[in-house]
Length: 121
Ligand code: FES
Image (cartoon, rainbow, N blue to C red; front, side, top):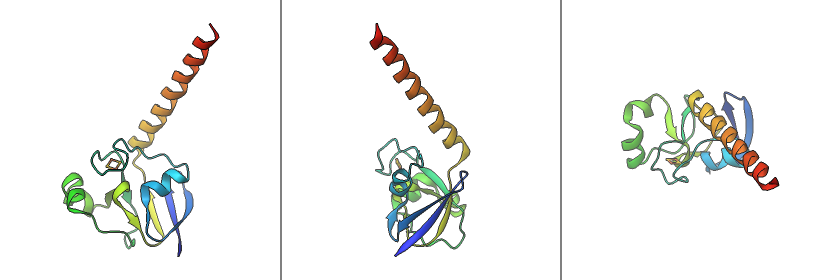
């Protein structure tokens, strides 16, 4: 079954299959979410907020509860790499995470630019 996920703050809708992993869906649709541990559920850099109050999503695992904390989970925070989506959902990527991703991209491009400049010598 196809579902739709709205990623904020960009306001980008993507289509996924019921049961798809949230992090993988985002990355597949070129929505950058940091994932330092590679999606192993150990770094928390992929933390996002589920905005839909009645979202059909997987329950947090014991390790996710320990990492994120019950209070944050109750506020809607989840680890994207540990979350499966089963229905239409709105998700917000915290602004500071957007800034970190943009900063990393700029640094990568700057690094590549410097490398290309050095290759000319
Ligand atoms: S990518 Fe590290 S916890 Fe999700």
